[in-house]
Image (cartoon, rainbow over all chains, first blue to last red; front, side):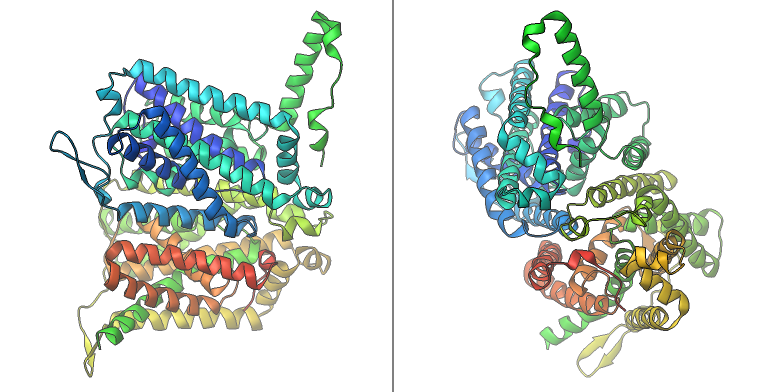
Length: 325
Length: 308
């Protein structure tokens, strides 16, 4: 049930799993950023995993191309799915994403598409039994360490992209929509289109995570994409902080790295994690790295830079001027 | 005939769904927040009941009320931890957009934290009784009445009657009693209720705890027919309750009956046609359609309020 959320392997495998979960959390974060809570990001994770795995096993595509295609497929699905959901208010949107995700999971559970392979074996999804023998890494002699570097590279690229995005006008517009929809609308921002874009981006990130995950484990089943995954993704973002893409990473690293991997709290992990998230949300509703802390950190950083080189300290347009609501 | 029998079976399944949906819709009506820890709270109560029943050998008639009480207490805890902020809105100037658009950050926060509490309570229950199947006081009868060519389980029928009685009783109580009036006033407009001298936070807490107590009653009724409780119970309860409540219109008490009946009949047919996967898909599909349809009918459905 919680396969994707357990550290099944120590060392390198754990790092890859943390990376995958970080990506899913980032995907949930992107939607939280535009003021929507999605409990259904695991659907795109599943779509990405299945498409990538199908392309490398049945289609014999190289991994990179398969991952790219999986991402695009998830974007297409997200555009199609999000379109009717966009007008729902926040709460209904959350429930609707959950039901879409469950429908996707059930659809994948009912999907059998077996293709005979060269070795006489069958490849492809096999209903509830899942999708076995995704052996691209094995066949192409990619070691776990090398794969870990790939995964870290993918995560790094995603984070840098999101950080850069936050500085553009589009990123600011997303933030404005998340902070106050009505205000953003009255300023002439196309609220629905920005949300659609954010959900497409989020789907792409989740699909990337799915593809990476499928190839690491060589075996996926629809039960992996159950609501617990989406719930954790949202929980990581909420715990880590909504102000920066580093927030979800912090949350995921905390839960998986500290609580799960150390096995200190065997059996009580969920109790502790749940308590922490709820307590945080009650007393610090925007997570550890919230806007105020970020502002303070960046002020301190700027003050340091000022002392070092006064030339570069020309104050640009303040990023956080939209934050004061 | 097969079709009729299936519809009848489905209709009898509506009893549990209506019971489960009632607490959820009442809780939503009071606070305008969906309590995702709803099923988990009832599951904790049921596990406690099972523990009392098996380990301490308490009789069923004591176990059942204690399940309801435990669930209500769990609800109090959930309210304190997750939905506490709802009362902060009193006396604070609040822009209309915050409630209408649904972009209200606190709504998102409450949803997420009730999620967290869901996992917490579920894990607590599993830690209490680690086995997959846990016995619960059993009241099921295998007796079957026949109506011409149709079969009818009397225990299911009793459950349906209980559900109808409970829903109508709650509706009546809401409409006629002074407490019900106060609860409705609080749900409709907290600020106005506050200005007319009602103690809004206490009323919100009361409404929420009543809703959770009802979920405990629902859990008792459902599990007494099953004779056992599994770790899937929390999820089952949330899913079915949410579907029945949303189809009936969140916050609308009598709508739950209609929603449950529709859900149960569609599920029964989907199961016959497509198997167990089809049954689950029908639940979620119906939930999705109901959400989309409701959004189309009224844009401001998020403002909720409690309708008897």
